[in-house]
Length: 113
Image (cartoon, rainbow, N blue to C red; front, side):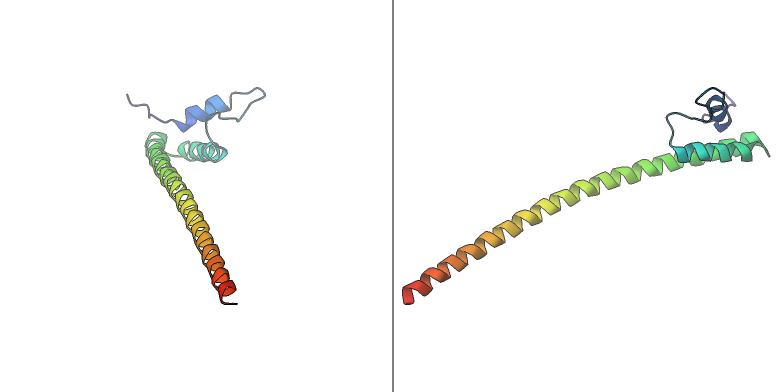
């Protein structure tokens, strides 16, 4: 019950256990693994329980913020693609209308000559 939900020391211990994949922490990005190394070095200096626990809460909060940003980005990407398609359609309609007006003008011009 007192063990933190996210224990960077345990992740690094498993990731640094030796063998050809030493220092590889799978399932996490390189940045996250580097952060774990930093967290581990900080948590071993002082009160590891309180530092590790607060840092794991910060880590979870950052993951949630990242997920929210990714969701917003995906939404904006879809919206941008829709706007781009709508703009292309409007532009094509404007060009077609312009061509039609030009053809009508040429017909009227030919009729007067």
